[in-house]
Image (cartoon, rainbow, N blue to C red; front, side, top):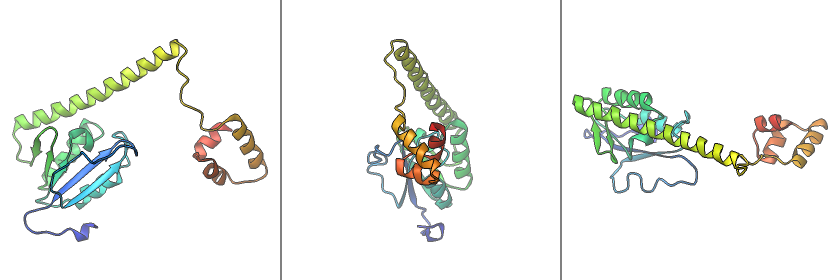
Length: 191
């Protein structure tokens, strides 16, 4: 559906946005049982600025609609991003409902509700930073024990030699990158 196809029945639509961090995760449990007129779904991490379905969703929403999101951390990259999105939507007459936290924002929200919203967003951001810190500590401990090998190389030494030879024969880097299943950046870095 394009923005021109948005049907207005006076009551507003119930629009859902779901996001999973990886291609292997599923959105099945998010917004399960919620009646939706339209659903937008991204497969991208929260820190990723490219969330085309979120952009399409924000463009699609109209005055009187309700945006349904499973939880606060599914919608935004950080607290300021969250506040910006919710403020923009509510100023346009769109309600935002976070199901996990059982919070709804309409633009006529109480100061207590705004405070809770900001605190929950800050806690989610804090939790993500703790996870990253624990991950770094775990890697440091594993390295100290000699158990951490790091990420597997994208190309073997043999493949790099093969690519060098083919590049010297004039084969385009873009073609080689596609053939070996790596980006051109990875290819150049390997050479």
